[in-house]
Length: 211
Image (cartoon, rainbow, N blue to C red; front, side, top):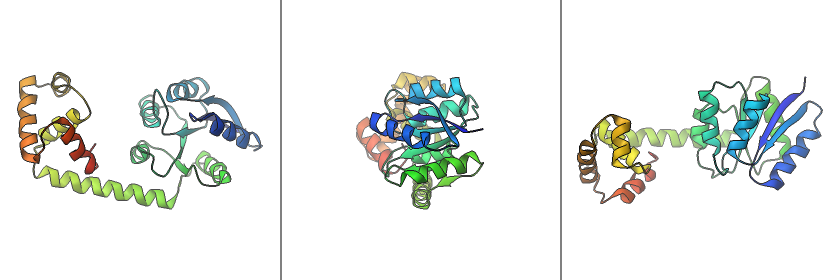
């Protein structure tokens, strides 16, 4: 049985190249192609492929959002991420169970090898990527520990939800507290961190890998 693949990338030239690459491999079969995250998720639901080759940066629904849906629905398809070095969301993708990560500027044959390795039950994550991801994770854990000495756990929850763009009303609903309590927590957060508003809070959390 060939390895059944869905390919997802928002660049037509890349998508065509991937399709031609796997078409030339006798043990691979491309069952669907997708140009955005919504199409990718629909294709996986419909075809139940062995492997999804997924770009993280796509319109409508990015790769990380696709991975979250796949996990939530417990779909068995294994995922190989095709990404640029500076692509955001890579650490989150690894946390969500991605089995393979291949850089876009690597030789295309490495992608085929990665797909075969992941299909066989293994993992393929380039050493440099793994090192950077681990470094980011450690930096984030240090930042969480440091900010934990400044903010309470609830204040940090409010800060992160606010920094993600949620209104006070939505934050209150998500945390099952009143809007007045949210405002009070935010007042304390701004005061303790020395920031003067939402945008400054976003920058503060982003600089420490907490957003």
